Image (tube, rainbow, N blue to C red; front, side):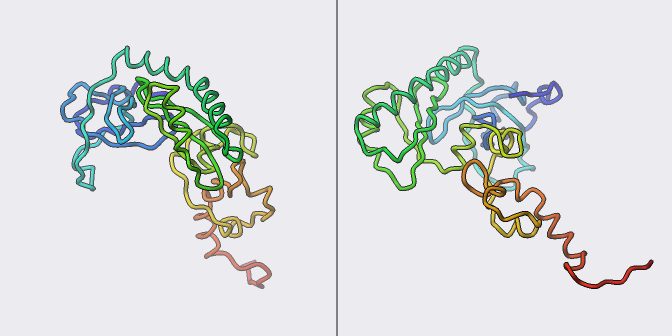
Length: 244
């Protein structure tokens, strides 16, 4: 994740820090009142609903900039070189963990229609999450128990949707460049077929469907502009007069 020099010298005269845990992920906000030396670009350790996580400070907000008036959890501390090294070591074990998960699922049976797509450790190896996709809701109790016996970490099994799978796996879009979801999209906007109609795009499924099997996220990018432009333009086949 790249932080410019200008961003890095921003001082923490603010009290609320926006923290990101993954390179293309949502921002979560924490109180930074007690960390006077914190800067944008620094790495911190925070407590979340999924245990302790290592994240990077992406921006700072002052209380007057925050209109939610929420109480935020405090940042536990700034990350140390040991924390950063630990994160790299555990990340290197994720592929091996995913292979073991698939093997356990095959041994137990009943997961033929389930695809296990990723494994993610937290920075200190105390939490291990497996992401999988399936058409129906899957009972994972037996698999979780088997994995708990194989790993010392707390095990989580998360069922994710097709768009999340595309984001996790990355790859190229039909346009020939890396997928939007794995390069800059942090949220998935609702996409409808009317967006393609409003822009005069072919409704051929192969031309408006992404690699995830859902309508392409890019259909929303220029939708509003087309809607506004059409309000000022004559309808097709309408006879109009011109000044010349």
